Amino acid sequence: MLARMTTVFLILASFSRVTSAATVTASSCSQTAVQAAIDSATDGSIVSVPAGSCTWSAPVTIDNKNITLQGAGHGCDSVLTPNGHPPSACTGTSTNITVTSPTAIDVWDDSKPVRVTAFRFNRNSLDDATIWVNKHSSALSDKNAAGWRIDHVYFNGNARHVSVNGARNFGVVDHSLFYVPNGTQIMLFWARGANELDGTSTLSQLSGNVAHSDPISLGSADAFYVEDSEFYTNVWQGSQNISDGTAGQRVVYRHNVVRGPMIENHGACSGRARGSYTFEIYDNDIYPYDWNGTSGYQWSSVRLRGGTGVIYNNRFYGTWDSGAGEIYFDNQRSEPSTVAGGECGAPVNSVCSASSGIDTSIGGRSAPLCLDQIGAGPGAIGAQAASPTYVWNNVNKGSGSANDAVTPRVDTTADDSTFIQANRDFFNSQKPGYTAYAYPHPLTSGSQTTRPPATPTNLQIR
Image (cartoon, rainbow, N blue to C red; front, side, top):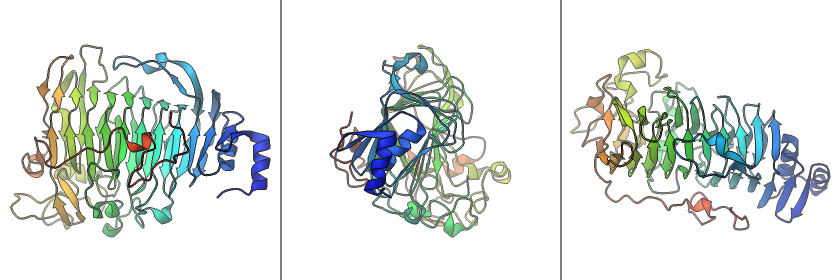
């Protein structure tokens, strides 16, 4: 809620100064000064945070305001390479924030666009996220939610750095750097809907039911976009990923450089929620974690356990494990040990079958369509439509010059091939009629989008 004008003047006098009608400058990079500047800002304002190094022991909150929170830079002015270590290049001007609280920035974003840009965050914690973008619980299924943007930010440390929650809370992460030395889950996208609970055992309230009731919208603004960003880690461990997500998430990864962390998602076998809904993964350069400029080894890079979409024009380098490979499809509910071992929470803790009550029998298929598996489309539990995934023009370039074709591998630890089959659930060919969404994302330039709405025209995008 906007403060009364008298309160605004008192806050400005003690914490910040107004440099123009649309800019509020915090008196320092401290958490209290930045929060005061945010509180005093009106819709359309830029909240400018000066260069410096500060420690935040509590988050700042942006509550349903159309503002840009703008630091002085992240300090990484050099062009980085896949075999370089980003911190060695980060010597430029920065607003350098060390985060000791679970979250640095809480964004409550129901109907107004928000932008966070030009910061460096140092944080080592899996609690919550460095930037947490939420929708107010009373409007989780609002189909007119505004678009958010996180750009030109350097995220440093073994932490979850971006979490987004909301069935229609879409936006873009762009031109950002993620350096997670020991590997972990960097982003989490959770697209739950109204009146849905986290951890319920009631089918009708599984998070993601609302998201799965909408049509597939590949090539549109209806997704979480990650583009023109760089991801680095120094080790391999199974939990490291660029992002994870479930509950009907729609996500697009494009034009990124990746060294080490996987692009990953969940099916309907985790967190008592529906699985991921759609994915678009294209035009990325993907390297093993130990790439030295000519070689390196990786278990997998694109590991998908549910949903439908497209994977194309990606360039992989180095050597990839014969059991997983560059692109790896998995169906955890075909594995009795996984289900019995507790990885699938009730009420989806059953092996996929026609008698499960949650999977869909479709004429002509040799096996049921498992709930939210690879190649599953829209629909209610037990009445889901098939929607194949399409994979094309992905290559392994070895140490730089080869162009060996890359096709998906299906998990062989259980009878996944019964449920995930080529030429039925996925095709190694171009998707008919598919067109990618405008690139760069319109939110990066202030251009108009149908949904989410555009950023305000009075903001200058740098």
